[in-house]
Length: 98
Image (tube, rainbow, N blue to C red):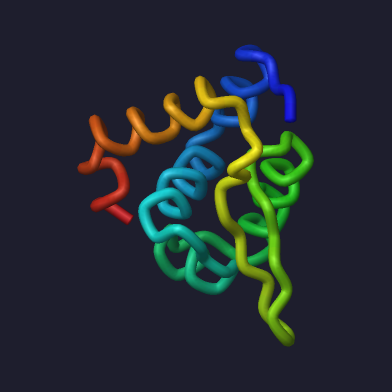
C-alpha cells in the first residue's frame, strides 16, 4: 500500500474522519453503530466518512452478518501507522471527549 503524506493528511483533515481513525485505532475494530454513538453523528455521515477512509486506504472493513467492522489497514507504510499511533498517544483527551 502506498500513500503519500499529502493523501494521508487530506484524509485526516476532517474532524469526523480523524476521530473515527483515532477511535478505531484505540479499540482495534469498530462498527458504524459504535462510531455513530461515540461521536453523536448520524449514521449516513459516519458511513460516508468511513467510505472515504477506506478509499484512501486507511481502513479495512469486514462484514459479519449485517454489521460492517472497520480496522486500521496494517498494510499502510510504517510511517503512516506511526503518525496514527503517535497522534493517538499524544492526544488521548481528543478521543476521551467522544
